[in-house]
Length: 294
View 1 (cartoon, rainbow, N blue to C red):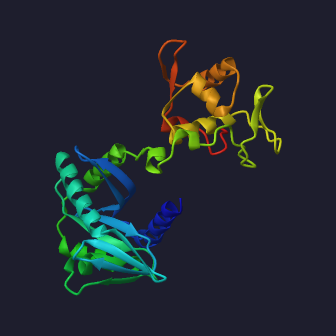
View 2: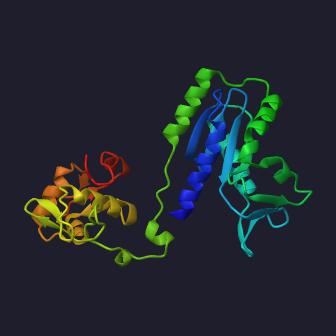
View 3: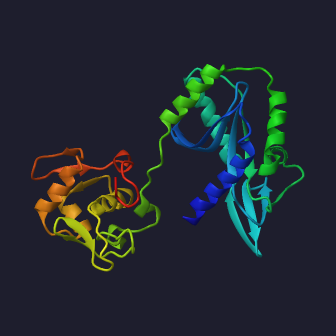
């Protein structure tokens, strides 16, 4: 979570500088499929003359772009930590996006920059590492570098209508990552706390009482607390669930009540009545906010 928040704050810091670029269409956090693999871009700027990929890094301390071993080395409080070179990441994004756009019959120059969002970060590299010297910069230098790209690419390749079409296609083809959380963190399903969590006191003391959910710790009542529990199940465990799995996860004893709750959500399902499997999706939970209320 801390890593995700740091990345988000980094993108916000860069947004401060690019918000004045009215001639650009800006797209954030896209993940596209090239036909063989997925590639992710932090921020994409589309103009009539060129497209610019921004690989944004919110890293503090002193960072050194090592051209020998192609890595980024962070030094902070006398500790060193190595990262994959973001220049390699951005170059791959450039290559994959070029192929992706060719399939759309779009031919336009694509540039990339590695933007360090933290102004206090000290950036270092070897004097002969030309790629780092040319393409790595602090966010405050971004507008000046974009002005140079405008001079480099004076010819318009796309009309305003074509840019709108390309940007809509990119957003439509965006494919959010849905990785296996348990596998990623080397956990098992038994490690997950089951039961329904109270959205007010956060304790797992919510019980089914007289047609609703009630927290035994703080007496908060929430008719749709099971929806948040299903959302947790979807993101942590699986995108499908049976009546038995639902009862085990929510600590609900009655199969009839479980069936009633699942049916009321109008979930798509497969299988016979006895062996019915309900299918969960991201779109389903977008209809509800964090507390499970419509």
